[in-house]
Image (cartoon, rainbow, N blue to C red; front, side):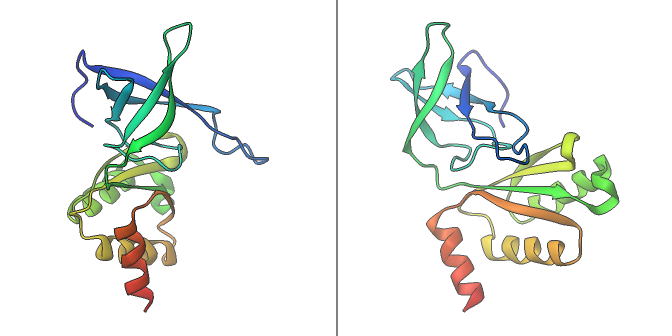
Length: 165
């Protein structure tokens, strides 16, 4: 995420919580840049919202209290959102930082959060998608983390098909 400026606003996403209580909230708020036309460009990686990624342009609805609520994606960014729950060393700060640095070498950005020992990765289209996927699978097989696809692109899906084929 870039530095917060006066152009940044919070956009709220409603989420459906499953029977197991996941995700741990029914609303996630993300930083975005107000584009001035009823849309915003997301400027941070979602922790829990599915189907959106940093850089996506989202239509917003403003409620009576002035809160911006996410609507449809009007222009996807071609970025992917990948989330990991770090298991190595109990998801310690050092383990999360190592995960971030390792994936950063493959072209991602991201951040970690102590709660749940999580790391959220923003994977731009120029990142080494195939190596990222291989590392994700390798780390899961070795018990270093669990991971999920929060939002993926056609390029990500094509890379999975190539790897499997």
